Amino acid sequence: MDNSYKIKVQNVTKEYDLYKTQSEKLRSFFSLSNSKVPHFWSLMGISLEVKSGETLGLIGVNGSGKSTLSNIISGIIPQTTGTVEVKGDTSIIAIGAGLRGNLTGVENIRLKALMQGLTNPEIDALMDDIVAFADIGDFLYQPVKSYSSGMKSRLGFAIAVHVNPDILIIDEALSVGDDTFYQKCVDKIAEFKDLGKTIVFVSHSLKQVEILCDRVAWIHYGSLKALGPTEEIVQDYRDFTKWFKKQTKKEKKHFQRTMKEGQKSFDIDAYQAQVTKERQAATPDDPHVADQVKKDFYGSVISEKMSWRNRILTGVAIVAMLFACVVNISGHSVSDVISNPAHIVHPETVLHDPNATSSVK
Ligand SMILES: Nc1ncnc2c1ncn2[C@@H]1O[C@H](COP(=O)(O)OP(=O)(O)OP(=O)(O)O)[C@@H](O)[C@H]1O
Image (cartoon, rainbow, N blue to C red; front, side):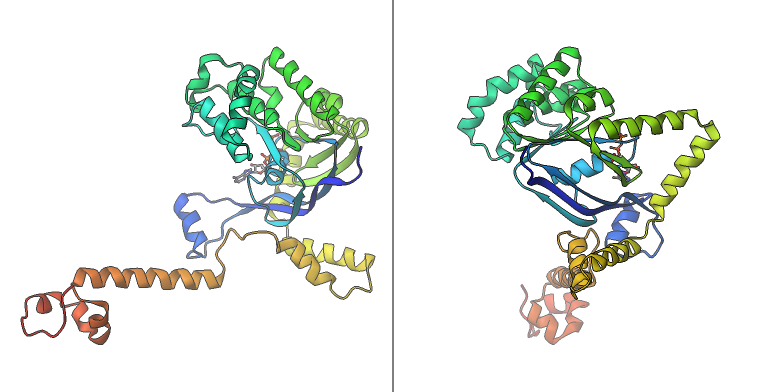
């Protein structure tokens, strides 16, 4: 196995605002509301590398952040902070990921393949193989929204493995298929491994993880709890689930609540300060560490909230648009209204006054 990395994730966090309504979300986007929206940190600073030709498993309890991480690596959702370097074309297989519900299976095959950079003749040459692998019969000509989760998984898997990606991200795709399809997928994944492709494999099935993965990352309530050889990490995780199962109902609830509270109260500034301190300790002679950390945290992310500059520009654009609308309704030209603003509120005096100097548009 080549030791260079294919995927490098550094200090990645993901914050969600827990809006109650769409209007609350819209108001917050324009920062028109000061009401405190509760936050939730789905990821609280994940750093890991996936080596070229490696299969990395992502395991963890429900809601721990596995899909969030795989979606960030695939570029489906942006991270809140941190950097993600991906060398190669990823292709994600998650149930329904990237499939458009209103398009048929065949249309989805073409769309996803085109998005992956294939030409129409290349897609035509692959079509029969993809159709045979998916094996969903006439449903191929039906809109995907009518598919069962197993059918979506079959189609998604069939497309992803045939467009020849460098990196394959498989998120729980095997859990919904029947036994025949499962075996076909396992064989295909093994084929991919033999070809030296890089795979990120998200699964609750520790057996599948043991069969397929070289290393495993255990994501635990938004943090990277452990990363290492499959056997060791899977054993640690089994020990944890055994311990958890032994707890009383009340203890389990308390544990889960405490972990989730930690995700709600995560302090991104304190995390940035901690990373800065660690890097300064490692490179004490470098005076630019703080600036570099800031760049690493925020340099490659697009803010999901508006900056003050953009808010001002948006405000100016809205005022200009409203002004143009009112001028249009008044029947005057822009220059008339600017030289005599009263025209805007007395349009009829101009429209019907033959002595008026203003021109009517
Ligand atoms: N759009 C969203 N808005 C708010 N919270 C979200 C959103 N998407 C995910 N989350 C939260 O982020 C956390 C991580 O979710 P994620 O789907 O990544 O977990 P997971 O480990 O893949 O879970 P599972 O094993 O159940 O598939 C969960 O608590 C989830 O509720």
